[in-house]
Amino acid sequence: MMIESRRKIPHLPAAVQCVALLLITSFAFQICVSASDVIYYEPFDESFEGRWVASQKDDYKGVWKHSKSEGHDDYGLLVSEKARKYAIVKELDQVLSLKDGTAVLQFEVRLQEGLECGGAYLKYLQPQEAGWQPKEFDNSSPYSIMFGPDKCGSTNKVHFILKHKNPKSGDYAEHHLKYPPSVPSDKLSHVYSAILRPDNEVSILIDGEEKKKANFLSSDDFEPPLIPAKTIPDPDDKKPEDWDERAKIPDPEAVKPDDWDEDAPMEIEDEEAVKPEGWLDDEPEEIDDPDAAKPEDWDDEEDGEWETPKIDNPKCEVAPGCGVWKRPMKRNPAYKGKWHAPLIDNPNYKGIWKPQEIPNPDYFELEKPDFEPIAAIGIEIWTMQDGILFDNILIAGDEKAAESYRLTAWKPKFEDEKEKQKAEEAADGLSDGLSDFHKMVFDLLYKIGDIPFLDAYKPKIIDLIEKGEKQPNITIGIIVSIVVVILTVFFRILFGGKKPAVNASETNTNASAGTSSNQESSEEKEHEDEKDDDAAAAPARRRSGTRRDQ
Image 1 (cartoon, one colour):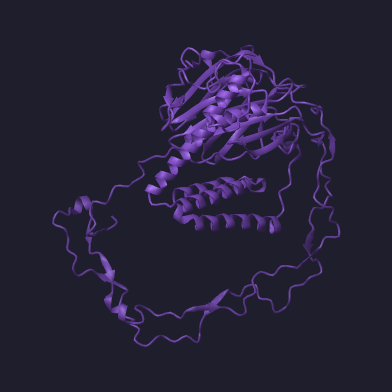
Image 2 (cartoon, rainbow, N blue to C red):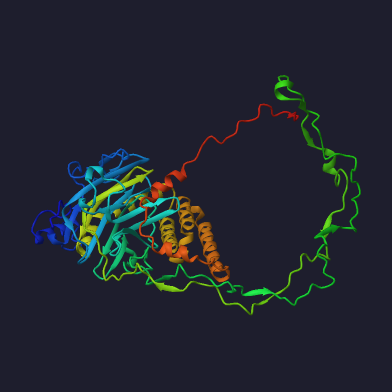
């Protein structure tokens, strides 16, 4: 397959290419990449117009621009407007099969304005025979793989979704990578790589560092799994009427003690209490404000009868109390509450009933995923941020080739951005040592947030980390908060209650569900984040008096 364009490696013989790379990187060691290892490369050195096709669907009003990366002379494909849907596509010269050998899907994204709510992922599209056209490209266009950052609300992940055809039913289903890594929260250029290997493994790399490794055929790594379960609960199996699931029962031989008074109140008056000396029985706790006067513009017909506002009685402030004195309440020593028979082991206990397992009629075996071919690369997103810059989109047949592009096209740019960021932090009064310390701490916290057993609490943890990054002075508080979350999880694991029993018919229905419609999590979250601003109540017309209820 031919490479459309090359930026960092000129069209020269392989030996000359290597020499040029060595000179460009000041004689640093570089990897010589053969043209056959690179299937497609888009550096956006030149305008994308005429090569990439923007969707003409009405929903996609976002304007794409050929723009420089902030602080660089390097160009990319820019999301230029906020709160817009964007869609653009580039057809490959030849259809790419993923069924044999290694394939690396790699691209750079720089979130120049951050990412509060939006996607920055790519879709690797099936051939047009599957039912789509470039000018009609939208969220329903069939893809083979969707890969890249997505963040909105509780969603904060680097998606990897495989669209796979069920060999028995012929239906397509989206299989989501479980526990994907989080999106870097800074405004630097980051490179995302998905390496598909012939041994059914996939690795997700961020900036060349492996963040996740999974097996396509493992039910532990993809949801729903590509291979259905061999057995399922029998939907026709019913729990016997005499099946007793109670581990403990009230002791039938227990008798309530004669001296157990269920009617005794929890609290009683303290008979030993004495009214404090100086208590003002005849003084009210509140009196009319002697300084208040009816406003001149008060209209009894419109505003109601005016009443003098109340103030605390100043005499009560120096006395033990005012008004009618009452004895305080105290706990009743005779109180025992409702009597219940103690629990004993249930002699008829049979355990929690479960339907018997039967062979799954939808089960099939699979030696390798049946990847759909890739015929185009598309970007189809809905984002609330502008400034998202895509660059250096690469499809390679060799991991070393992808690594070479990371070292030559991304790494120098990233290091330059980091140095500028450090300079800005120093100008803001942050020392390099403190900045490096915070970065190390937050990198560790992000790794903790990606631990699978904390997945249910991941949105809360990521939210805490992001707040800490914006306010480094509260780093210790953030760490303490995350430790509290982790300890909460441990205590729930150790002392948590029983899980509710699963209905057999529901289990079967869920197990056989074929497709997912949640392609655009960012879009679904967007409407949830909208809030009304008209909740503020108007102030009362009069504040110096009180209106009597008519």
